[in-house]
Length: 68
Image 1: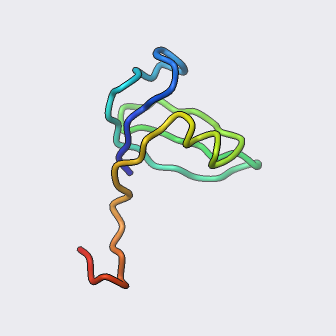
Image 2: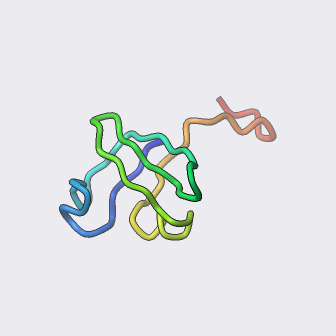
């Protein structure tokens, strides 16, 4: 995925307003975010994650619209 960090500047090493490429996974009831440059952060819910991120794209194809 690609997104902009909108949380507090310096939180977990992230810079407010910076665009990051990252992936997510769930483990032990947490949603984890890990960036391509190695920063990571656990979130207790999707809602908490979205309080800190503006998602730009998720790199998936929407088969219903024939997207690429």
